[in-house]
Image 1 (cartoon, rainbow, N blue to C red):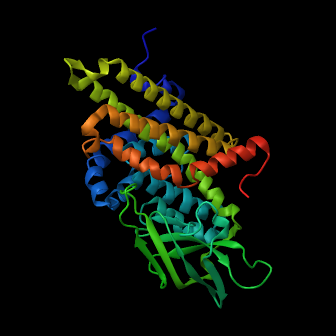
Image 2: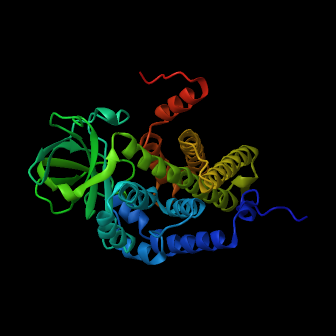
Length: 385
């Protein structure tokens, strides 16, 4: 047999169907042609390229896909930048899943078609300044009033909120009663009085993402905007499991982009009379990076196949998210060392990916929290409290 093509990473493509490969290739071409030219300036300016939203819709990214197809889309989008993959993840798998899983028929009819068309962007707001890893203690309250609820509170790190047409806001019922203190979800539209999303500035990571905080100041939400099927913390956490699955693939895409950049540079850059890829220490780095990329992609695909069979447990998502983000950070940092000084400029991608991955190490469940999820699964002992 001929030797495997190094760019195919352990014959990964053999494990995909023709339709899956075609979708992957279509999204990759879009990222190469439409996204990557925009990234350096958008990242430096700290803005999300909202002009891509209708193009993503036309590409079919917001349509319903199998779990592996969804994963391949996230993989390719994050090869461009995590901010783009995060936009799609929040739009489709946080806001969209909340409406699909817990919305009324009228809510699904009203929002899902326009979200799929890219006419309305979705956001999701659970985290608060003092409540991240322990969202069950959130302080935003919803006070029942005639015809609906008044929302009051302060949210933070709500991706897409400054550009979204609808934001899923999670709050605690404030009044006495059988459901007092219960966490519920509300659909808050952009121009609702008392709803004030504000961009988070001075970020050193995820700069091409519309990260937002939200001030809710007696924000009236009609009864019709309450998600009827969302009761308790399990509702937002189930949405987060959907999004965390996407991070598994996205981190693998970032790792792949960094590895490919470092490999190409090692064959072009000459020192001491030959390409630096010919030196033993560089080859060891490339071998370790290659192994990490292979492991990440195969783990992502395995979990995707489990998800297609409805056999993916949430602890496996924790395993995948924690493992692949760790792999990707290692690859990005190692790639930067091969790139040398070029690696600290926007001409290269690896340091930007490394910075983004620092956020991914923390958001949607920190590295430590996922370790405790796995520890509890393995031992039966709860180390959270």
